[in-house]
Image (cartoon, rainbow, N blue to C red; front, side):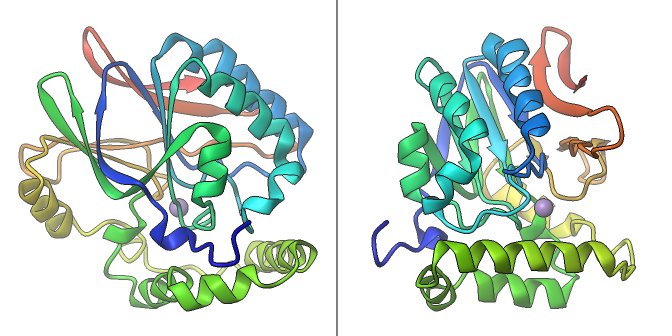
Length: 258
Ligand code: MN
C-alpha cells in the first residue's frame, strides 16, 4: 500500500450511468464470519448475477482498517472480484468502511464513488448517498465524521501496523455494542431540507440512500421519492435476512433476500 494512501480523497467519480442496477448497503459484514461470507456469495449468485451493475452504498463491511486487510476478508472479496469481471461494481464509503481506498477498488475491479453521486438511469437522474452526510442535526457525529475523513487522521492511522489497526477496530466495535446510548431519533435521521436542496441542485428525481436502517419509500421531499435501502440482519443466532432495491417493469421495488 502506498505510504500516502488516503481513502478520503480517493473516490474516483460522482457521475455514473447505469442500465440495470441492483442497490445494496448496510450489510455490515464481518470479515471473520464464514457464515456471513457464504450468505453474501449466495446473494451474488442468486440476485446480483441477474443484473448488470451492483451498487454498494456504504457500510458493506462493519469495519475496514485499510486495503492491506484483503486477506482477512478474502472469503467475501475473492468472490466479489470474480463477479466484477463480468459485471460493473460500484462502491461508496459508509461510516464504518470509509477506509476503503482505491487499492481495494482496483483489486476488486470496482469504481469508488464520491458521496453523493449522480447516476443517470434510463430517463432519470438518481441521487445516491450513504446517507450519513445528510444527518446534519447530529453535530457530534458530524464532528467525528470530519475528523476521520481528514487527510492527517487517515495518514496517521494507516501508519499503524495492520495488527494494531485490527485490534483497535475490534475493541471499538465491542465497546459500541456495549454502550446503548439512545440518541433522539430525529437526530439520527436525514434532514429533509438538505436532501431536497441537493436533489434540486443535481437535478435528480429519485433519492437512494442507506445508513438510517429504516428501509422503505419516503415522501418527505415533495415530489421526489426517497428510497432507504434495507440493512442486512446477520445476527448469529437467527436466520439471516438481506435486502436490495431494483427497478422492475412495475417500478422501484425493495426486495428481501433470505
Ligand atoms: Mn451507516
